[in-house]
Length: 90
Image (cartoon, rainbow, N blue to C red; front, side):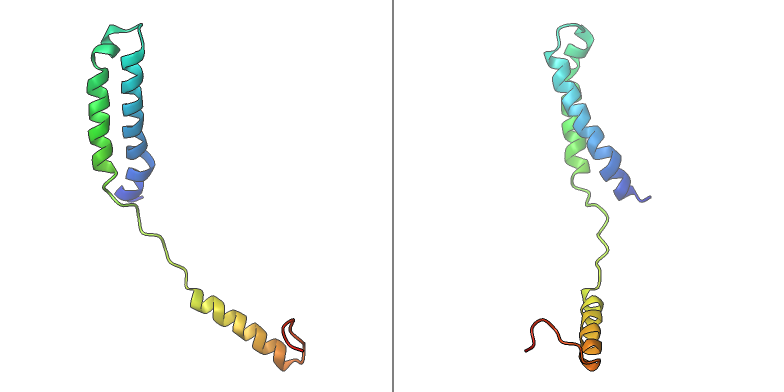
C-alpha cells in the first residue's frame, strides 16, 4: 500500500473528522475542555485537510480500448466469413 492510497483512505477522512469534531466541540455545553479546544481542533483539522488534499491519489490504470475494438472487428470479420448476416446489412 502506497502513501498516496493511505492518504486517500485514512488521512483525508481523519482530517475531515477532526474538523467536524472541533465544530461539534464548540457547540456542546457539557465539557469545558472540549469547548476550550474546539477552535484549535478545527484549525488543526483544516490545516491537515489542506495539506492532505493536495496529494494526488494513485493514477488509475488505463485500459486499452484498441485491443477490445480489434476483438469486435475480428468477431464481425469471422461472422462475415461464415456467411451469417449482421443486423445492418440487407
